[in-house]
Image (cartoon, rainbow, N blue to C red):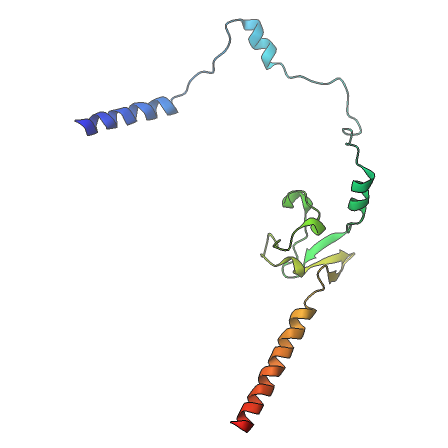
Length: 149
């Protein structure tokens, strides 16, 4: 019995929740007309809206950033500030990843015209240097181990 009453209650709640209900309006028709009228400005905004004043320090910081494109060397994705919360590329932290291929931040490079330049963090030189150094050390240890053991 309790289960049936609970099911009936759930049915009533679901019907009440999903039934179309007319929006409430005030009793005076003039009030409803006044609230539905959009507020407009008389300015034409022919040249766009006025931009906020930027402090000289903020302008110097923005001018220090690269004005060209940043390109992911792995997939070719071109960094877009609008897709990345409005941050300049230089403001992105070390944990930033390419939105398209999840490549690390160090895989981005500056694009000048049709050429892609060096990366912000020095490129892959440190990784390649330590990789080849580790490989040479492993080979040297293997040769030593064969001769001495």
